Amino acid sequence: MADVYETDRYVGEYLLFHYGNPKEILPWENGPSDALGFPVRTVGHFSEGRVGRSLDVGCAVGRSTFELGRTSDEVIGIDFSRAFITAAEKIGAGETLSCQRLEEAAEVTEVNVSRPDGIDGKGISFEVGDAMNLREDLGSFDRVHAANLVCRLPEPRRFLARLAGLVKEGGELVLATPCTWLEEFTQKENWPEGRTLDWLKKELAGDFELIEVADEPFLIRETARKFQWTVSMVTKWKRS
Image (cartoon, rainbow, N blue to C red; front, top):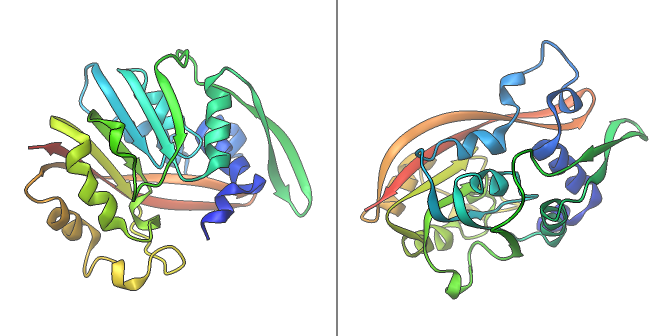
């Protein structure tokens, strides 16, 4: 199932999701406009102030990574999809990318996306990696961000167990998940036994203090008339 994230269709959808302007994504005035800008809003849950190092795991095509770069000296974005990372690297290098936005049937429109304003790409790097088996020499970070990742991993506990070693003492962790557990991504034996929030509290107990729980909607355009509207649960934690 993970191979779908290597396809041109998904790369195009995520480029639009991360970098498209509101009118390019949502042409309907009565549509759920409060769900736009999700990759920016999740980063906004970190405390104010500048830090040294930040990590974005499951960064997709990189918008949250760039947003972390506004207040971090160094940021690493990691994703399992080579196609996503290639797109993020090109954007980081200042390239404008063209993606096909599906309207309906076989009709498509070309949309251009580029690096967000106010970001020069310095100190920001991307790499292909497995969230369940991150390289040992990553070091530690002041901020770790993982949006809509946990419920897409075959063995999510392996990722959660690594977090204590990634977040510096006193550092912050922001996890966002729509809690959409599906067997094509995660076998039932690896699902939470009850609610995802209770499961996260149990898995992170002893290493992290839960600071905040919030709801953040997001919108992914499939066609001009079909969208994925979902609400992600955002949790903010402090490393004890």
